[in-house]
Amino acid sequence: MSRKHFSFFVGPSIVIMLLLMVAPLLAAVWLGFQLITFRNVTSPEWVGLENYLFMLGDPGFWNALRFTLIYIVVTVPLQMIIGLGVALLLDQVSTFRGLYIAATLLPFIVTPIVGTLVFRQTFDRYGIYPFILEQVFGLDINFFTTDNITWLVIFHAIWYVTPFAIITLFAGLQTVPQEPLEAAKVDGAGWLMRLRHVVLPHLRSLFLFIALISVMDAYRVFDSIFVLTKQNPIYSHIETLMYYNYLVAVEFQRLGRANAMSVLTVLGIFIILIPFLIISYREQVEER
Image (tube, rainbow, N blue to C red; front, side):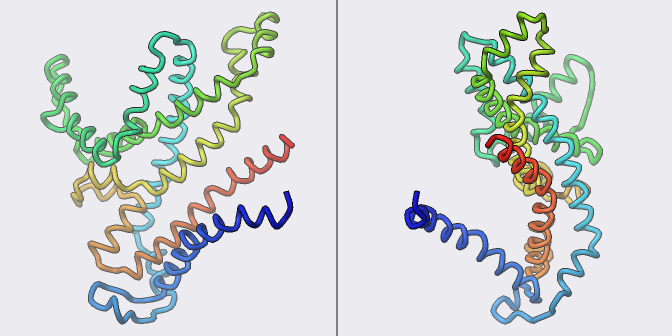
């Protein structure tokens, strides 16, 4: 393909990306240098790096960052492990496989707010799970205490996002070459050995892809925290970066600081994704 034709096809997408991503980011950087509240939106005051320095020294920001990182470290590996297990099970099923796949994808298909509301109601005081625990095991558990809410948020994340890993890995399993599997079986390799030395290496690029998408999604999670906590201040220990950004902008009415925090968040995402991008680039070079 000539450079002219390449520019003709790629040019419009580059322009759209610049308008949708680069321009808002530059605007956020600029607004981060301003003192903006709901009262002076039309006449902001220049404060330089004050907003950025304030956010870097804000305990709420670091608390939100800490919980977000814990959220990522716990949920991303678990969803890939569970996703692989369910994908392997689906690969062995032939009867009603489409029905099982549809049921598996249901949490991922439902609108996030609706799905979180349903999830919250099932664990609420008069929900189905507290009722079962009380009637069957005689346990009276409140899932929305300050101690239990953290695990409930993590469990919701795994329930909601794991279908993405399941369907991606299941699709990858359909492309595993049969010749190496048959050769390994002839050589006496068991199921675990075939999984370790044939299947998992074949799915390595998919694991990397899932990790990239999942880390980005987990870094900007907002809906589930907003619904599950109902903005109750006693749950301040589970504020994510996006949720705390919302509080700074709407509750505290500090729009300049919120923009500064958004810029710092983008930089943080970029730093976290650098290792994944390097590994992905190396894999692409090796495949060539």
